[in-house]
Image (tube, rainbow, N blue to C red; front, side, top):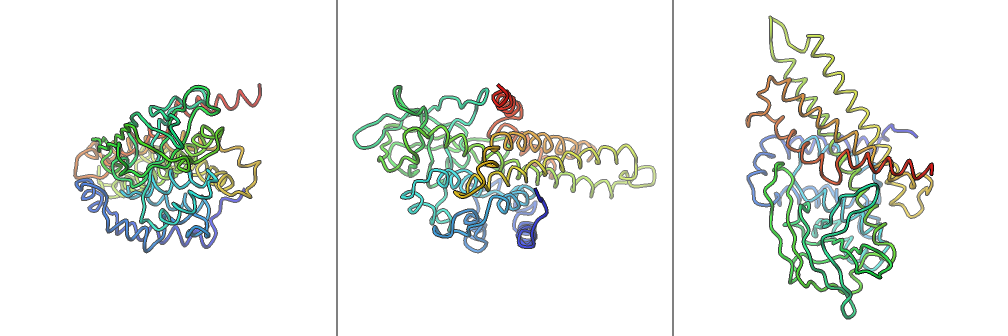
Length: 389
């Protein structure tokens, strides 16, 4: 498989890097951390001028009709700049769920608004798994009349307190053909209580969402009766790939910040970047980043085939393995790079005036988001053993 970027993809990469270097520099990130909610101006630029949320949305629904690889390029640049926006929740969780659902009515109604950025959305679910199987959801759906009733609580939902639309994963009652259902629910609907949570990583917002007798019409369900668990699983795998791409960009930025500092810091009359021991540590970081980048872009190629109805089903079948490998490599590379960045800054990298502490907090929080490396290793082992059983 050819991992070289095309001319069009290089243009996307360069334009994103140039825009974000100005719009989400260190001062802008720190200002966003103090703000209640995301910057409306930045989101208007991202959605209205650059059309990034429309990237993987089909043209018939107002999108650009590009693939997941192009989205991965954007995410890597966004990770470099710790961009605070609804993009990850909307474009990497909610939109893929709708695309995979094949629910033509919901797609026609929601995707144009999500593509334009006039509507933001997120996925509200319990995202953990054991031995390759999703854990029970904390929200329960009960059939009522011509629709459903939702009750329960979702903890630590990305943008849970800000999103306009919730894609809710709920446990179905015993006797149903599927164990999990996914429902599109307006966030302002009666019976929904949302609260922002204090977080270690102040650049990514999490919320607690509680449901009490929330009514959902039958056409609010994203899938057929027996496909809910499979839909949620694939959506979470695509989200893990997106997060891994973002983490790879963050890891690269940690190394770049460190190299710049090492070139300036003098010790014994010369830059400490010239010391052989320092070179070895930086070389190890670069190797981890390149390994993560390779895993992420292969996973992005698999994701592209999954989201394309006419995609290569042989490659698409590798989604579980590819997403797990990408998340493992990217999470560990980012965590190592962030920790080493603080140490190679002489320990002062964790003080408020330096940026490495922001990346360290993002790395520690992202390590657990959408599955820890240990959980993904467990899933990978399950898939391998299942294949050879």
